[in-house]
Length: 79
Image 1 (cartoon, rainbow, N blue to C red):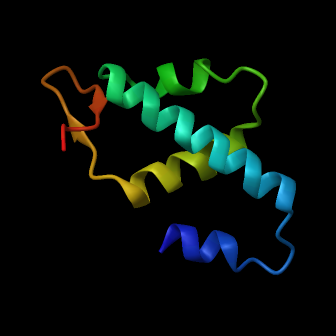
Image 2 (cartoon, rainbow, N blue to C red; image 1 turned 60 degrees about the horizontal axis):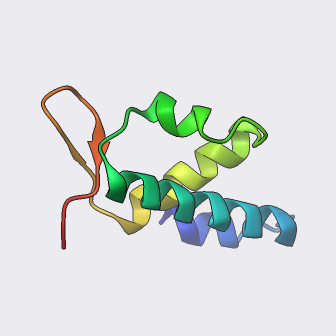
């Protein structure tokens, strides 16, 4: 749903779409490496606007079934 809504916005900026995709892929890669808190994802992209980060986080959550460990870190389960 999130990806569809984002891509259907009438004022969609193609550079924003590309940036969101890039950040979403990088976030997913981080989550594959090790469990992280959301704030760790935010801190990994200091030059990225918060809006872009939230849109990218929405894309990650739309595409992947995220898990949480006992400390509350987000993770991408194997498979």
